[in-house]
Structure formats: C-alpha cells, structure tokens
Image 1 (tube, rainbow, N blue to C red):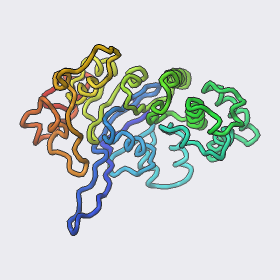
Image 2: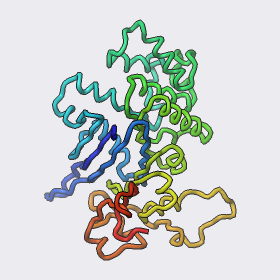
Image 3: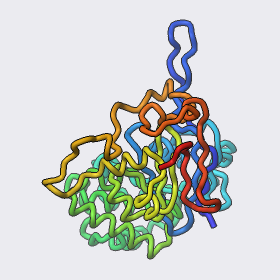
Image 4: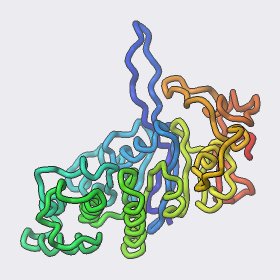
Length: 329
C-alpha cells in the first residue's frame, strides 16, 4: 500500500511579460505522478533544471503546487494547507521532512547542535522541556554521534557530522517520509558511503520512506528500490532499480547511464553517438518542444514524436517498468 501518493503534480511559474504580450508560464513540473510505500526508496534523477528539487519543495508545500494532489497516508496535503489551521499543518510537517543538500547552510551557525535538535521538539510540542536532553542524546546516538557533539556549533563539525545532525533534526519529529535532496553531493567519497549506509540502516530500523534526489547514479542504484527519470518537468521512465539500470527503455535514460564514468584509464569514447551520449543542451522550459520534449535530442525520434506526447506505459501489460516513448529501445 502506498504511503506517499502524488498524482498529476504541476508547478508553473509566471514569466515576465514581453513588451505588451504575455509570456508563457515556466512549467517547472508538468504532470508528475508516483507512489512510495513504507520502507521504500524512490530515486529521482535527471539533468540539472529538470524539476527534481521543485517536486521536492512542492511535496512539502514550501512552494504551493499549481495543480495536482499529494497524499501522505490518508492526509491530503494540498487541501490541508488550503484550509489552514496550525494543528493539521503541523501534522503534515511531522509526516514529511526534508534533508537539505548543503548541511552547513541548513544549520543555524549561532545555534549549537543541542539547540538545533531542540527546536523541532519545541515547535511541535512533542515532549516536556525536561525530557529534551534525553531525546537529543538518543537522536545523536541514532545517527552515529556521541552526546558530546550536542555542545558544538556547525563550524566545529566535519561535513559528514553536519549531515548527520541534519538527518537527526529531520528524525526528531518521527516522520513517515524523508525527502533527501542531494544529501551526499557535498561530501567526500568515503563519507558518502557512510551516510548512505546510515540511511539504509535507519530505513530498516524505522520503516521510513525516502524520496532520494541525486545526480549520482551509482548512489541512486545502491540505495533505491525504484527509480524515476525526469526530463523537462516530466517523468519519462520509472521502474525497479535493477530493471531500469540493466535494461533502460527510454533513450534519455540510456544516455544518462552512458555518461557514468568508467573506472578504466584505457577506456575512452571514440564516437559519442555510439554509446548514447547526448549532444546539445535541454530546451528552455519557457518554450519546450511540442510532442515528446526529448525528440530534438533523441537519436531514435519518429515523426509522431514531434506532435504527440507519449504517456507512461509498460510492456508487457502489468509490468511495473513504465516508460514514455513512441520508439523505445
């Protein structure tokens, strides 16, 4: 059963007027749908500017969606924020939490770790103030830090320790869903592995669902149960991680996988088109191509691709591996 359900999510930003003519809206997210079950990780990948972070911010209602529905369990997130009311909104905030990309910027430099972890306890009134020190010590132990870190400031911590504090702060309110927006991109490679292992252990222990956003396809494959690939605000392929990485059906997914560096100093690309690598930049979101947005860069585009946007479908019927392509690989 799905814990987080997203249906037809859209986020459009108004563009400035061009002289006396209205400009088309910037469609940052254009009809995204997916589901995540308890204790499951959905990896969300795609080029910079495809709308991944906008999806994340819209799920938490940090920016209101233009259209669509987000449900966590039986809670309609969009309707809850539209109706207002402090208690229902705080219930939504408790259910879904955010782990930011840059742990240094995400922490208040004037607050100690203890103050940072006590703030969600105060806002949500989860415990009496007398019980905060014990809860903070338990949170630090949960993410692999000792109680002595509670008195330190962010500048006294390493990058990995700061990200552990960020994870502990998100876990303070006992969420059911964590949105992880590039949580290891600013860390050293060895520290990335530690944080990914920690996230896996926490999921096994607490049963939390993750939406894992990253450019690092290796980490996506290692942590994700399923993967969704975005291009220009749309999901173009979605399926189990192993199936998507071993047999990608959409040509954009194949290009992303072909761009993964090969750990072989003698390996080099003689003909980029032979390996599926793309040339050129993604089109502007202010004026995306008609039909399939990917067709100007696709090596297998058909005439129908220029006029008709493909829907997510699967082969054979009932398969959980779905892709939006008129001429799949």
